[in-house]
Image (cartoon, rainbow, N blue to C red; front, side, top):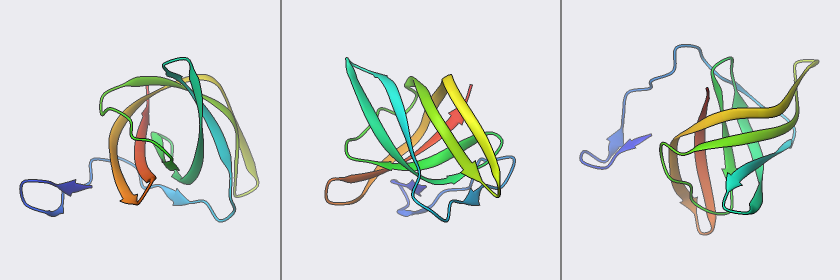
Length: 103
């Protein structure tokens, strides 16, 4: 994450490292108005995940995650998994990178 006051990477707050996702995987997010957003998963760990999406999310928002995520031969199924938006910033025009913590 970038600390806007210092414009340099802020200290990472994760307790466990995340592992990169090597193939494109999509999960769905609800709780954003009446819409359902699709997330492209970038990395995941036991405490949360990182994803790209096409619109910004408010930091601190509590949303609901749905879908299956395969990593290293293990599939995690998310049904009504609550997540908190920990960060969200535009990485290129129309693409946002968000970090989510499982609640």
